[in-house]
Image (cartoon, rainbow, N blue to C red; front, top):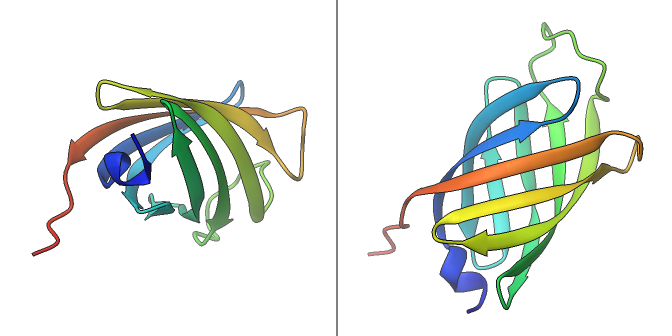
Length: 113
C-alpha cells in the first residue's frame, strides 16, 4: 500500500476533550486538503504498511466563531488505516497538552478522468 491507496473524499471528525467538529477532507497522492464551516485544512501525509503520519495546517477563517484554539496551528497526527477508515491522534504545535483525535471515513474515490 502507498499514498495512492488513500486517494479519495473523506468525512472527518476532529475531537478533543474540549470540542468536536466535522468536515470534508480530500486526500490525493500525499496531499490533504479540506475544511468545515469554521476551518480550512491543508497539509501532507505519508502512508506505509497501514500507518499514517501527517502534518496538517488548520486555519480558522470564520471570525465569528468563539474558540480557545489558536487562529492557526499545525496538527501533527499519526495513526492507521483499515477498511476505508483512518484513525489518527496527535497534538498541536501551539499546545502539546491538547490531544487531537481524528476519524476519517472514506466517502468516495477521486474521479481523475
